[in-house]
Structures are given as C-alpha cells and as structure tokens.
Image 1 (cartoon, helix red, strand yellow):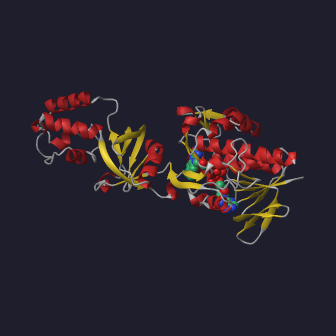
Image 2: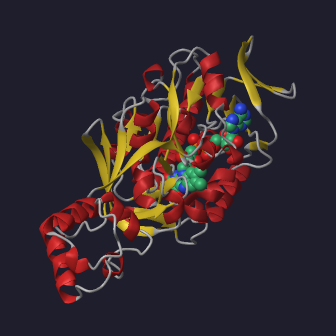
Length: 413
Ligand SMILES: Cc1cc2nc3c(=O)[nH]c(=O)nc-3n(C[C@H](O)[C@H](O)[C@H](O)COP(=O)(O)OP(=O)(O)OC[C@H]3O[C@@H](n4cnc5c(N)ncnc54)[C@H](O)[C@@H]3O)c2cc1C
C-alpha cells in the first residue's frame, strides 16, 4: 500500500482524493479549516454551479489557457457528469449552459463527495494547517503548524488561491509551492466587484440596471458584457461586472488607465434614442427637464446624467433643450464613463487569477517538474475561469487528473 497526502479538502482536493483512492492508494486529506468543503457550500449562492454545457478553453485565462484543453480531453464535461452521476448527483441546465445539481443544493454535492471518500477509506484530518513540504528519507513529509507531520510517497497540493479567505484558502498553497522552488505568477482577485472613482456614488448606491458594460484600457475596448449592474457606495457589482472584473483587476494593478463605459440602452441606436427623447419633449414641453426623464431613466440617475451632459439647470422646461443638449445626453446615456480604481479586496473575490506557473508542471499529469512526487490541482495553479461553473469544472478536472496520475505513478514504481 502506498500513501498519498492531499493538502486542502476543497473541490479539487476531494476529487483528487477519490480518484487516487479508487486506484488503490491510501489517502489522507489535510484541511486547515474545521471541516472540508466550506467554499463548496457557498458556491452558486448555495446552489453550486457545478459546470457548464459550453465548456471549452476559451473560458479560461492564465499563463497558458491551452493547458486546460488537453486535460479536458481526459476528464472533461462528459466524465465529470458521469463521475457525479455515479455518486447520485443529477444536473439541470439553466441560462447560458450553467449546470446545477437537480437538488439545487451545494450541500448535496459535498455530502456525496464526503460519502464516497468515507467509502474508499480516505482519512479526513481537519484543523491541519500544512506549513511545509519536506523531502525525507522515505518520501515527502507535510509538516503542520502545530508540529504534527505526515509522510507519503506523493503530495497533491489542492490548497486553492487567496479568494474568500474566510472559507479556507488564504494563499498558503502559493507559499508551499514557492518554498519548493516554483514561480508564482502574481495573484490578483477575479470575479470581484469593481471600485469606481466618482464623487456621486453615495447618491446612486443601490440602483440596479440592465445594460451593456465595456472596459476600456488606455483608450481601447478590452471587453464587454451585457447583464445586471448594481451600483454601490464603493463602485459597482452584478453579473456583468463580475465577468469583466478580471480585466479591471489586472489593468488597475498595472496602473493602466481603466474605464468602465455603460450603455443604458443597448438595444437602441444613438439616433433611435435621440428620436425617443425628442418625441417625449414634443409631447410634454412644459415639464421640468429632470422630470421629463422620469419613467425612462432610474430617478436617482437623472441628475447625474444631466450633469454629465453639461445641463446645469434641471428645473428649466425640457422644451428649452437644444438638439445639441439632446445629443450630449444621448452620448452620456450610451457611454456613461466611470474611471475604475481597482477592485474590492480578496474577501469579496470568488476566484484567484495567477498562481503556480503551469510551465513548471507536467501538462499531462500535473506533477511538478521541480519537485518530483508533488502534484498541483485547482485554483493554486495559474488558471482561472469565467463565471458560470467554469472554475469548479477546472477543480474537478485537475483534481481527477492529479489524483489518478499520482496513484498510477506509485503503482509503476
Ligand atoms: C462565494 C463563491 C461562490 C462561488 N461559486 C462558484 C460556482 O457556483 N461555480 C464555480 O464554478 N465556481 C464558483 N466559485 C469558485 C470555486 O469555488 C473555486 O474555484 C473552487 O472551489 C476552487 O477549488 P480548489 O479546490 O482549488 O480550492 P478551494 O475550494 O478553495 O479549496 C482549498 C482548500 O484548501 C484548504 N487549505 C488552504 N491552505 C491549506 C494548508 N496550508 N493546509 C491545509 N489546508 C489548506 C482550504 O481551507 C480549502 O478548504 C465560487 C467561489 C466563491 C468564493
């Protein structure tokens, strides 16, 4: 019997442990929290967006996004659904290909993973914070902060990134990898609310919109997304913003000029919007300018958009607006520009971009090229996905590959 230690009982760690144990390894999971799977319970607002029907490499980022394609050939969507199907989890598809357990409960995913680990004799050791991985005479030794140590032939580092440290992953995996000689691509938060630099945010905090948001970097369009936008005292969040936040996070970190442009009426051309406004003015020329927009624009946004368009006297009749005033208003409504000054902290981020440089990891087995016998899986690697189930899918795929390969390598010895 050969031993494998999995550091981290998160999504990738539990799958790695199951796959290694199924191949006959004796597996211990060392978890720093009081219980495994804390983050998994919080995923998908407690519903666990387990994967995505539209899985392909275009949804991944990092040093080498093509790295994921080969691994998906081994353990992709089909294998993931079969894996969970065998454990009893049926999935349901929602918008944009998102897959959720039919139970709508993240806890059910955790329950079946833990049940399978128990069936296979995987040992869960909680409150075990691994501080170092050392090479001993008989293999590798994981030393915990409280002095306990555990030995094994192989170690799979599944310690996650730095996002939402209250749920377990606090960057400890990067330190373990760095101490072994690995390069860590500078981590930054992704899938995180964006901070904006605008004086009027207090006035519009809580306003929800549905529009198109674009990220402009050094005067060029970087990426765009249509969907929910939610203004807040610090800036903005919502599904569309989370998806764009990676670009904002990286570009503001590198001190590049980063702006958000919001189109409040993405389905209308500029000419159509101008026509709509002129019609309203014609119908009710005596209304004050600000009141004439009630019913078209969120009331709290009206004074801000008027100011942005250089219309100072909101109390004058809207019939006094000139065609040039309307054009400037249309420009403000179609490209409301807000400077970005960063993102919310790690505490509010769902995913970590950056991590262990994948060029230092065997692309087929996920074994370290620097420290033989050490494997990596999940968010600790420099791979991150879009929102929509792609990050958990990476955790399942990389965990399955690392677990199987670590166990298979020991059998070959
Ligand atoms: C609120 C929230 C919602 C999310 N929702 C979704 C979603 O619906 N769909 C999706 O695809 N993705 C989602 N994600 C992202 C997804 O949860 C992560 O990408 C995924 O959990 C990463 O898996 P992992 O195993 O690499 O790391 P983690 O799940 O973070 O697990 C790492 C584990 O390692 C442990 N650990 C860390 N350091 C040590 C150490 N030194 N010693 C011992 N143990 C250690 C941690 O305590 C933790 O349990 C969400 C993330 C958050 C925060």
